[in-house]
Amino acid sequence: MVAQKNLCVLILAAGKGTRMKSSLPKPLHRVCGLPMIAHSLRAAQSLNPGAICVVVGHEAPRVMEEIKQNLHDWGITAPIVFAEQKELNGSAGAVRAALPLLNKFKSIMVLNGDAPMILADTLQQMYAVFDNEQAGALVLGVNVPDPKGYGRIVRAADGSFARIVEESETDEHTRRIDEVNGGMYVFNAKDLVSALALLKPQGPKKEYYLTDTLSVIKDFQAPVLVFNLPDYTQALGVNSQVDLAKAEDIMRARIAKRLMDSGVRLVRPNEVYIDEGVEIGQDTIICPGCYLKGKTVIGKNCRLDGTVFITDSVIGDNVFIKLGTYIEKSVIENDCEVGPYAHLRPNSTLKTKAKVGNFCEIKNSVIGEGSKVNHLTYIGDTDMGQGVNIGAGTITCNYDGQKKHRTVIGDHCFVGSNVNFVAPVEIKPYSKIGAGSTITKEVPEGSLAVARARQVVLENKGVKKND
Image 1 (cartoon, rainbow, N blue to C red):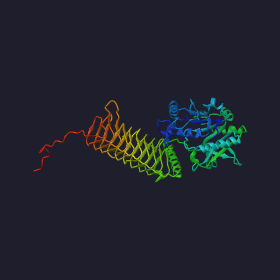
Image 2: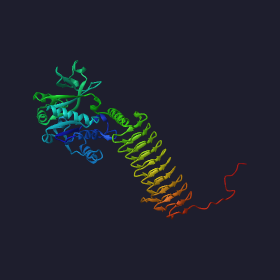
Image 3: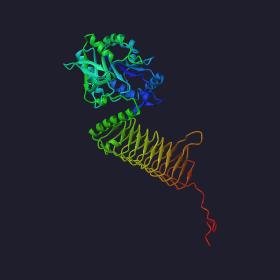
Image 4: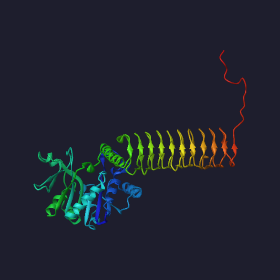
């Protein structure tokens, strides 16, 4: 989108969120892997505005720090500034906190930090209508199945905006109106600043409501528009843990549809849990119970059996990940096979056609091309070459109580069952390690290493037979 340097987007994220019953500030609660404020920031960035201002209040330092530390991970490159609402006295009070910034722009869009489901396309359409009509204000309107609790949008006989009636002020007629205030706006900056100065406190809490600015701006003889959005779910706010769960369901359904439309097979779409940033290639099959999180990228023609958990990892093409496998911050190249019940801990890499079998754990290691770590094995802090075979029960003893050390296993080595590698140690290529050995020294290329005590048999010292 063309840069809108005269536009500032305000995201209101100052409220306490008392109904969440949580010590975590409301904007930081996560939906599909990202805090709600991150979803709002990403949508706002699509407008390419001159600035994005986040209005903070409750636990302001914590919210600001979380945003500052994660902008890169969230993909936010737009300039972000903060305004602090010292007194939590309503939505108009939150906008007033940003007054010094508002005066620098021609247009102001106001979003909510607890409404994570708004889509970038919707914001772009809202701004285009506002800009083309040179309006004084535009309000997002949605038709909801149950309008109770919402401010109703009342229209004039010609269909234009007349006013907003809050739930507490509705009569029999307005109570039946199902078009409600979606809580998002675009304003002419000068009209907004002038209207804010004329507001009076409302209700027992003496709060200032942003909705009241619409009637004031209309009195200025400036056009006030309603942008009606058919998909009311985009405007839903999150005010409780129940709302959070509903938002998660709605957003996950969107993600599932997008992936299926691109050629991904989700066996039971409502039984997989895929974060917003996950990418999956065509013809990949995802079975029920899988969790795909963070910045995970999965290639084409893969199969993920049920209850697989993957976070922040890259999976190549034609990879088979079996039941119950857990993968974190790792790379699996093409044509690999993992599991069942394997655990790839951070910084693990499986080269092409490598295999890690059942009940194996890999940590901070490279498993070489075509190498096999079949079962009941721990490989940590290891550089393994290609064509290696690791027997069952093998472990790398990589920690001496103070420091971690690396094990190097060269190409085409064969390691028998129940072997211990005491790092630091290097096994040169084409070597064999006898079963049950504890290896503490370098093994030369092409050698056979056996490190175990000679078997001793003492006759008549076994279990006594019953008389």
